Image (cartoon, rainbow, N blue to C red; front, side, top):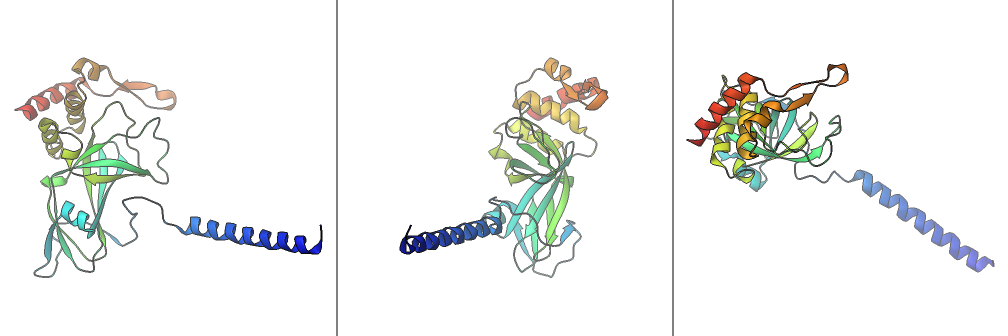
Length: 246
């Protein structure tokens, strides 16, 4: 190969290497593609007693999300409990009207989430403590509430800690008014969440009470399996389903 062609190959090789370096830098520097950004601001517990300046704007949670003023997500923590995080993306304090019940769609398995099994995890409904209400959030902070949850589809893998769920209106996940009522009932302190779960699967998934009573859960290791619902939870679930259908 003469010097002229050797020089051309060297130049081409340098160009290719530079292009690969730039592509790698762009890939690793790019933020993850998700409609709900991870919190990067101070986190405070949401409270109705947070003192905000007089005249603070009151916003509907979903309307503020649509405008980009808020980012909201559900983070499962353990069986039938999730952390609702509301991020104030503005430079002003906001009073947020949080509904009594909301829906959650799985969007991301974060670090430590583990394997969810085959298929996408379930959609969930979450009950906000004390039936929702008005909560103050200082500017550029993330407020959180712990909620009770119920899964809407018995046939899909269950949520795990570390996963992220996008928040939506419960009507977007189920059109059954009785199931929507059950999600509100879930927020009552005296209600057994497992009984509500049985009622939700009975109505939303058309599962018989006999099948629900026979459903097993794997405990892992040498512990084998156990009934998912106790006989008492099945009986209470029947009662709650009847109440919700009235």
